[in-house]
Image (cartoon, rainbow, N blue to C red; front, side, top):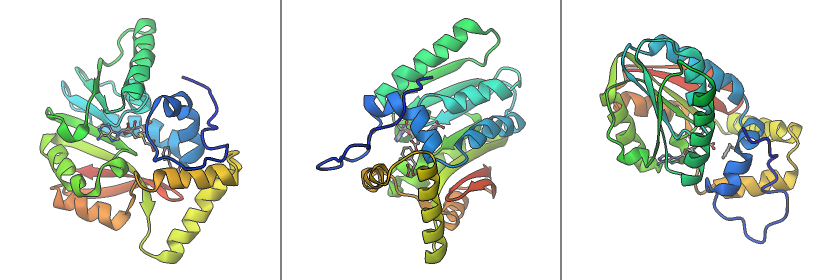
Length: 247
Ligand SMILES: Nc1ncnc2c1ncn2[C@@H]1O[C@H](C[S@+](CC[C@H]([NH3+])C(=O)[O-])CC(=O)[O-])[C@@H](O)[C@H]1O
Ligand SMILES: O=C(O)C(=O)Cc1ccccc1
C-alpha cells in the first residue's frame, strides 16, 4: 500500500474543485481515509469477521465501490467458506488499476486466497449475481440520492437467504445540536490526525457537492422500502456508522 501522506488540500486553492477519485487521490488514499474516517480500520477488519458469518458456500461476495480493495482484503483474511469468490467494483479507472496491482501482488505471494475479480464499472449499471454478502463501505453516500433506493432494491433481490448487506456511511443527524456536536468532534478528530484548518475547510467544500450523507432514520426507512426485513447498526464512531441489513 502507498504510504504517501495526504497533503492534497494543504495549499490555498483559488477555487476548490469538486472531489473526484482521480490519480492524485489514489496516491494518498490509504492515508486520507484513515485520517478522515473515525473507526475506519475497525470497520474494515470487522466487516471481514461479519462477512464470514453470512458467507454461503459457493456464492459471490460483492465489494461495491472497492477503491484500493481494503474490504476485499479483509474478506480474504476472514472468509473460509467453501467456494466463495469476491467481485470488487469501482468506476474510478485510477482506483481499479492500483487495486488490481495490490491484489495481483497478494495472489503471487499466497495460495488459497479467495478468487477476486475487479471490475471497472458503475454499480448502478451492474447485473448482480446471486450473492451472500454485499459490502457498501462508504460508497452509497457518493451515489445520487434519487438512485439509492433502486440500487438497494436490486441488491436486496440478489441476496441469498442467510446473506447480508453491510452498509457503512457518514451520518447526518436530524437533531441540529447532535449534528453540530458530532460534526465538531469529527473536525477535532481530523485536527488530531494532523490536518490544518485550511485542509479541513477546503476538503469540506470539495466534498459538499459530491457526497450527500443521510440520517440513520433515512437509511433504515430506505432499506426497509427496498425490501430488507431487519436493519441492525453494529458500529458508530462519531458521525460514521455501519449497519447490517438482512434480506
Ligand atoms: N457509481 C459508482 N460505481 C462504482 N464505484 C463508485 C461509484 N460512485 C463512487 N464509486 C467509488 O466508491 C468509492 C468510495 S470510497 C470507498 C472506500 C472503500 N470501500 C474502502 O473501504 O476502502 C469512500 C470514501 O472515499 O469516502 C470510490 O473509490 C469511488 O470511485
Ligand atoms: O473527509 C471527510 O470529511 C469525510 O467525510 C470522509 C471522506 C474520506 C475520503 C474521501 C472523501 C470523504
